Image 1 (cartoon, rainbow, N blue to C red):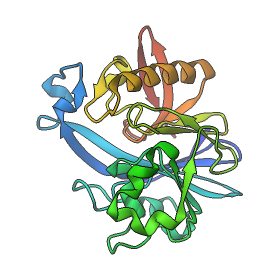
Image 2 (image 1 turned 120 degrees about the vertical axis):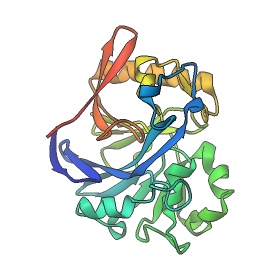
Image 3 (image 1 turned 135 degrees about the vertical axis):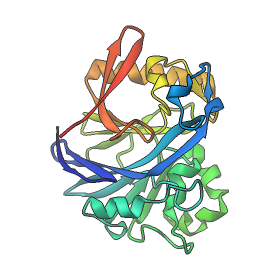
Image 4 (image 1 turned 90 degrees about the vertical axis):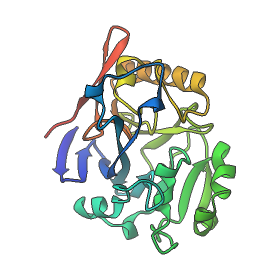
Length: 259
């Protein structure tokens, strides 16, 4: 793997047949009480709050362009909704996206499917893949009405693009999915929200819908990542959101990719 392009809002790595581009939708903060089972010192906070980057990922090859997650659009916190700018910096654009796959249906991952005027943000993406367990939640969101004709159920093992396979990662949400690219890089969505969960994987997140299952899934996938030697990418990992995971006893460390 090598880094082939880096901008303020994006970073592209080349794997083989496919490349993966991190797209920064923006950065926000959350209450310190969002982490369950740990108390952070003031040096880990920004004005008493947890820093939270929000990222999406573009996977591209000769068979097309797959966008994994769509950012928050203009539906959540200030400082987010920069996905269009990130795509432009990466040398692409919304019209070039062929298919979208969501890790899950929380607001900072799906709201960017619709633009500020209520239209389709990715007009040529004729399939929007959502885990079967979360189709009802997606359909219940009024903002997503323009997307419904393009909605396709997503299951474990499905391939939204040749070389990409969906991997069940439930707990944070009922149908939370990760995506394994070329058998080498696991894009794991919200498996981790803060680096303290690397040092202490048992720590959970306030918005985990099943904390025990989220903890179990994180431990299982951490072990698999290290055992298989996979790279990892996550929506809320530190800059640039792509790197390697290394075990240190019962803890783990994230080592970001560099040029």
